[in-house]
Image 1 (cartoon, one colour):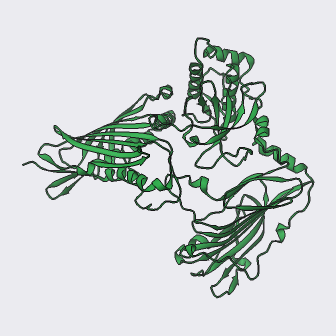
Image 2 (tube, helix red, strand yellow):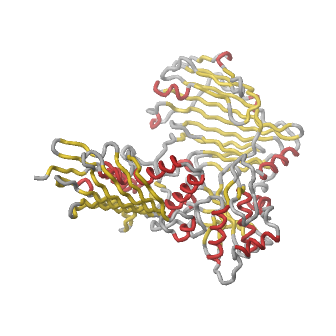
Image 3 (cartoon, one colour):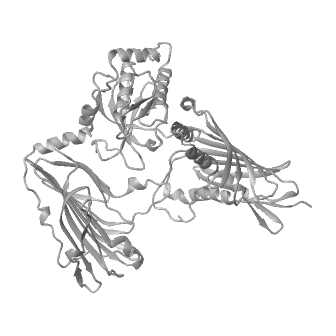
Length: 640
């Protein structure tokens, strides 16, 4: 926010020159469009043209953005008409709609221009909109509007739809004194002319969401930042402005010394690991984030729960680390499912993640996520990505390092979910009683601990019960008869002690079915609902999962008196994906009758977070094996 405000002030100071005449923009009276490639012709609709223009007029008493959008869509199938026949002339903080035009181009070339009385304006926020009427298959819907807005200095434009896009143009322009920094997808070409930038792309494929993929990161877009000079958005200037000195008003010299002394943070007999664990655990246990609009409730440093803003939390850690004389680096990264960090430019519109990296221990403090502890792993979204570095090795002279810090990939042994379930059929043979233990470590354990802590703190008993059902028996209708938690304290994160849930429940629907003399027991449901990739037979994007992980499930079913096991073959599955002879992901299950029980065990592993498209067929088989197990049934028959 400070960065944006500074840019606004700088932009106000430059001299105004009326640059490109965006206000004079108009469409062609007889439009022409690019030829449709054969591979796009079967699409239910095609965006023939998507032209946009952002012009900033700055200086003197004027600070305004003009926004133009010009779109043409060809309707090939009537089923999608309602997706494209409504238009709202709105972008950001709109002051005025200067132009708004729409027309329908029939297959024979006839052009029907919509009259102005078709434009509707809302009373509350004065947003103008229109609806195309009488649209038929083969029609082209075309419109453009120009808005006058209160400008922002950074934004992004997405150029991809659920249908193909033939021609995309995005123009950035400004009056003298304004410069643009930009980051565009590879599909775009760019030409520059004074203060004007034109991005163009042809034949953009339809956007398709795919499970386990970097969908948002791979979408075609242009990110831009307006500035008064090309250096004002560089990381070095951003860091020196925002973090040259941490500022937390509750740490005076006296209070800081007491804080360090009370927690023994400078105890020479303790290792750096021990001291940082004490610090991180204390802050995570005793400080909470202040929500937007919530009043500050800051007390003394050692007096219990306190409410802090994100910047105050960063400052508390930063100042304390400096007082402890522990060198550290502030590292900015970007969620790998959203995008990549730009090594040269800070884009304020990109959501960055901030961590403290301690070179001595090769570990991280995650200040803005209250469920992640100090340790060797980072937020899972940062794995296998790079971050930019502000080095506090010399706290008196922090410096931006032109290096990229590589975040590690966490091993599958870190995140495990182990379950043990004992099942006894009721006397009516329709439902069953369950006793289940769930043990979750790593990212699963951390998230569960944090969620339970929040729910308990807010006394949300109903939501807590929903969480227990979800984590233990998702997809089953059950009545909980009781549950408890073990190792739920945050301190257990540092040793990766599994978070444990123990519960008792009764099924209330669809657990058994009669098939003649046979009784079908839907035993596979007890592992919880599973994702599947049955419909996704082809793949375009590489596979990217949240984190590496392992599962072990053990199911012990008491065979009821008067029955014998006819078949349990559906519980014996084996699917694996191997890479250079090494198992990368797998689903293996086995079953056997042991005494009066059917014992089923499952081992499931996903040891990597990235898989190329070539591995998708085998990856899909592993995922679908888990879904198949979830549907599997045990077949019982009357004894004798």
